[in-house]
Image (cartoon, rainbow, N blue to C red; front, side):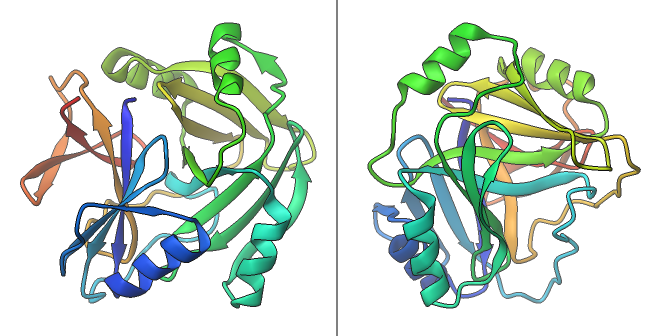
Length: 257
């Protein structure tokens, strides 16, 4: 499972811990500390990391901004979970709807502005590129509680992204979904390795750059397993972990398998 964890910066660790355990049925791994808590989501973890909020985030909820876009969770049913969130006045980015590919989705924000998605159902790809990979994905079945399914990113060049993650982390595209009604020329490719997916957004429209931020509230970086390190652009270290960035500004650390 090359994607092991999504690291999310929290300005109030207990508040975020309560949010993910109450609304996303997260299971706490080990004993939380004043600076860190790890949450199990079946196929991967979300690691909450305490920050003071002094650094304002430059992330915006516009998918034309390159790099990280959202964290997706597969669920048994979107609507009843959305109703619970709405009753608690959790802010939504997109109300429940039926989306391209035959799935039902909704988007909402965690306490520090990280965009999260619930997805119900199996995707029916416009183009299947790896039938075995699609079969393995569907064999995972309906989760008993929210399962960490994907991290979405916007990129400039789908082919270059595929080559980077295939050569370094053994990802491969299993399928694509087209968005014919989107005037921006929107297409999605699904890079899969293990149980999780890197959901790759591409647009014909011009995109915005975002410089890496490690201490701003919200999503900070992903932890990937293994990988070929030679020539990777290292930008920093956090808690002893070297931090790298790809060509589109998506930030990740490398962990041991």
